[in-house]
Length: 301
Image 1 (cartoon, helix red, strand yellow):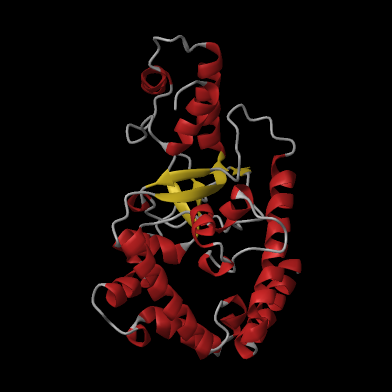
Image 2 (cartoon, helix red, strand yellow):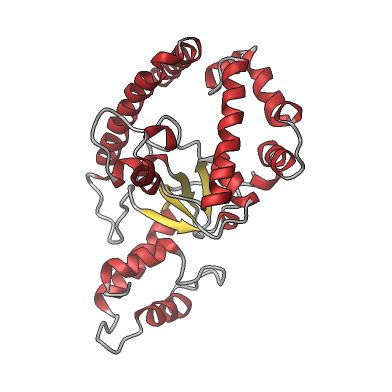
């Protein structure tokens, strides 16, 4: 019930932004202040009793190849409210291949084949939603706001193409303007790297360490099309089996790893992974969510 009320409020705020553009900066500030509070309070609620040996740090940024984010998460987890949670179940058993989605195909048609936005399936679907009961879930409340979004997507594409993919903190430092940041920009409360991380591409981690897209579909599609090497992402939810695996690595580092000046810590961890944990051979010690455990418990950079 509360979630529906929030969506309804957000819908009417979008109508106000579309009808009275002069109020848009203030409305975005107010909305982002709500997101700042929701993000930090949710992290506290989700991690305050955390006794995981391998820490969670829901604000931490890791770098992942966009091509390794193959599927979309099936957990229905909210990118802010569920930050820092560990969940069991089959939510990671998915076949929602991102590059098979209408969104990715539409972006490819537009950016690589020069098809006008209006002729893409992305545009047609969003326009159709405006006149249906699904409009409460839409970010575009009128055709005008949809057209503005398409112009923004063109700008984001050109920016990444010309200047490379930047984190939200880098954009803030470079431009000092909230309009350059992901959906909505900054809030009224002071921003730092932790709070800005809420706007990064967000992933959930499945039982075998696979990153599954949670939020940031537009930027991920663009990064894939531009063949970007790595993008900054924030981890929202981890599968319980994956977290158990991380905990075992942390325990090994604390109790059994040599940790002297001559030790190749990464090599020892890798040997432990393959000899003792029967790890999937596709998972290497260079997995970013393993590396942050190693870095936390050793002097490895």
